[in-house]
Image 1 (cartoon, rainbow, N blue to C red):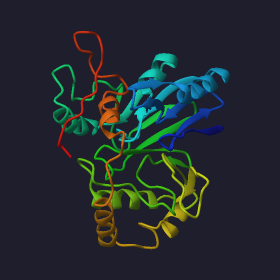
Image 2 (cartoon, helix red, strand yellow):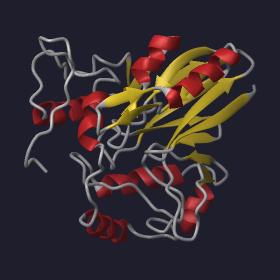
Image 3 (cartoon, rainbow, N blue to C red):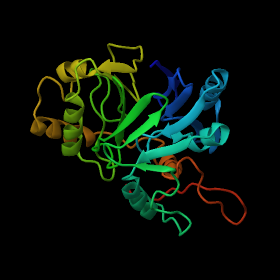
Length: 287
């Protein structure tokens, strides 16, 4: 059973997408695809995701699943575009419905916006397993950053979304609607229960003052020992106090309002107005 993992960086949002291929069956999955988005003009483009599309076509693979770790607040998903190009089923954690309820209300979406997850092909529950080729994808519910976050376990690899970052950068914020630092600590401890040599694949990296180059993978052992927020045996109380204080100083992600409106629809644009044009809303004084 041969598995290959390739990473693709969307530099504006520092997001890593992954193409995971079973070379025996030549089937593949894509995790957290990104659509390029210029907020100033309201224009999307596809150069980042097209590199993945080209790679899949070049290796003549069958795209089985397009896996979202959560509704991202810092970039626009390319799931709908990728499915249009290559097929496959778009999947996300089943608690997406909680996110849709919150943001459906915030953006005052009309009855055309279903809040039951219908925009996605698969709503995944904790411990659910998917198959592609000879490999199994196990779904772990890892909430805290958002209530709907999941991680995907494939062999000795875990794609963690925004649950945890490189050891020298720390952990994800927990101040979005439904976020919870206590739950994030528990989710990270669940990851720490895996063997130490398990590879954790990052959704983002931003470097640090000391480390300029971006990195996209680490191990459970490295995180458990050295993560500046939760490693070295830090208790839940220590982590929650740190995370709560830190989150109070953070500004809102610049693409939160546009990205969530598209991402909660599995990458489809909001329903068009009578003139056939889709619009993003900007609620005033809501945050």
